[in-house]
Length: 279
Length: 340
Image (cartoon, rainbow over all chains, first blue to last red):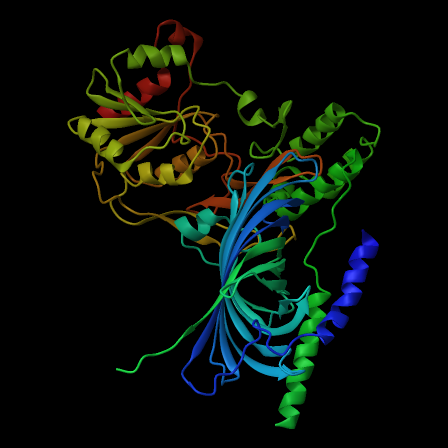
């Protein structure tokens, strides 16, 4: 099994040598219509492992299974190098401590929006994009056993320098696109209770104490990467499979938190154009 | 331009290096008796909020406690033996909010009420309440023979709404005074206690202070934040009030007694309260047991600790003779105060 996998991996670059010029997954410029807008929209479901640590709730590490929904929309005019990317990521996880005695529930919604500049290489088979994402995240970790600290709210805003590489090739005479996206942290702002502060003090008493905290890539080294493979099913529909890893973590106010999610993704991608009509 | 790009590239290099090699994590202690002992001792050492106060009150030294109990722990112990040792260690804190629990037992320190007379009899309560009393959410109430309202609130874990309080106070509108009996009220929701207390203040009133820990050190605390009682915008009580207390008045009920004690028309009658002024939080051990501890200290309006309770303004106690006659001296003392 291992040998087969290795052979496929070694063959991938060779296969791409025979990539045809008319790869339908590759973005083609449309010199006749400057206002043509190409939209690539995908919806994916994911399942995989989640690891949670939140020292406000417990010093114990929790792990378990989680589910995600990821929707991405990329807008680009073929004649321009700039594109816009939007991603909605929602996940929910059930995690337990090492002796499977205590349970936590984790849920989050992440919205990413960003602009990217593209370079096309190797006869447009390789597209490199660099830019940045603004990430807004809201979520919670709920410990089913705790009393006055049963949950931790998660709210943050992050600026994330991001790079994307997309490579188009042919596999078994079908056009395939491999895409890798890596988002790194730069700076942001987040909500956190202080070290031993209760939510009763914050929300019932209105006693704020360093609860809105600026973060950097040192105090919140959060990163996210995604590898996907697109295989065309029909002229309109493309199957997308992949892996999404989201490492959200921070140490602020003497508290440490990490939520690591690893998801195997499957979904559909649709690519279409909006052509404005003259009145 | 070229220099700017160089700086940008260096920044990106730093981001990549720091991010990909940074892991926000903690070292997990092993799930052995020794590992669990260490985990419990450190959780308390870093989060418990009364070390300084209790060192001053009765000489508590948490490092001495470590040395005293460390020798009692071995990796060959059974779960039951470990639980016993750990519960003994926690009892050194003399705190009803410090508990260790698992499926078989609940480790506790209850000397704050078990070592004192109860000063409460449910037989007497039934005699005073009869069978035709009214029940509104968590409140049982009736008007006594001398036109004194009697309100029994046994636990602030039982929520009460603004509508319930309106109905109860309107029912008592023609009474000469009101008795609020919170004996045996072991606490519950602080916001419920606040909602009830808000019916007895006529203006924004300073009733205490609150702090929280800002770090792992025993003295790492935030500034004392004042706690105010806001007058309710619904029905409010203006006549005299007696609040009945005993040693089992604890936690949120202790806070309620402390708040009410600052009001001019309120008298605390009965026994010293049990205390419990640290808002508790929870954590867990490698073995999966839950641990609860006092995390945020609360103080009275004079910035004094109420962890070991507050005295009644007018002390009163149950006696065997009075009980035999069906008389509750604490209720009778309050009735006398309210009718004078």
